[in-house]
Image (cartoon, rainbow, N blue to C red; front, side, top):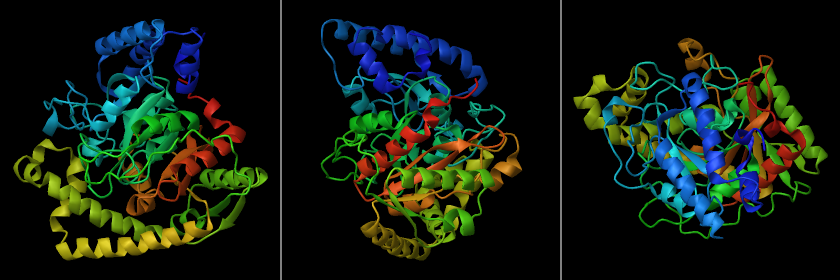
Length: 463
């Protein structure tokens, strides 16, 4: 079996069952791949190779004795470095926490271990998940495997770069203003921000309590559903966790889209933030494919991206300030310039502005829910541009806010970004699907139908 690094988790599990592949064989191949690519992509902050190999040997022995711990048994996973892994540093890619060693696993990591996953280590992020591609931090920024001169999106940057380049098939990311879907968009993978409260955030360093999500990042939709099944579940120790029954997210992936109604939010990329022509052309192609597969696609209108972004900014900055205020007062120079610049506005937000934003947020939620009474899923752009060059700070600052992800952080609806084409300079462009609360399975179903026809998941970076 060649090119083990491109195997999906679903195919890995099948190969294990057929005894044509072993966890030790796979982990060895992936560690070699990591050793080759890490100097180019900087996806890892901390690779825990020894522990990963020990876990692979244990998983292999268990399989040999006929025992499987779960659907992720013996499958390696990378963890974003604001998520606690017992015994490893949780640094947030920052000098502030560079010596902070986690005493126990985050709830989501515990879920992965219960499902049998092998934890490979901690992945690069933007500082505290709010900075940007920065060169003034203790660790270098991750780079885009489609072209390492370009950024890989953020803040789950190492997760996106590592999955897309074949370092590992699965990764965890977090998403407060689009931080799972941004790297998914520009690295050409599948990233799902689940329904707010579906996945526990206990043991994850917070950015904004009412906006934060943990979610799966994978190369295929089937893998995304598989990873979500391991993650989802009520956690009474997370105040934001929802007491809802989890679903089998893989069931129905092959049902197609015939008869489904899709609301296409065109004004996001045509009027609010005019998109790059390659993004627009790819979205039109997605529409054609879904219609050809039997979906009814109709143009709809929501409040403007400007309003969603403004509400997100007030809430995020206010809540982030409540977390970072002591360090920003006592140790401002230990932050990188980008994170400090993005956190400080929270010091000037008033209680009235925060409450006003939350009041308007409720109205925006109602507007989206109103459309979702008539449509099974919504479709729109994710990033409005392909990734800029990582060292072009001006262009990166211009293009990073040009996106349509924040609406679904404000509202908490599930939203998935995936590859929908390649730009003229060979970089991924993307589409986004969103759905009703706790109907993440329907979002995944539509994504799977599109993936099956478009086949972009079979295209890999030339690295």
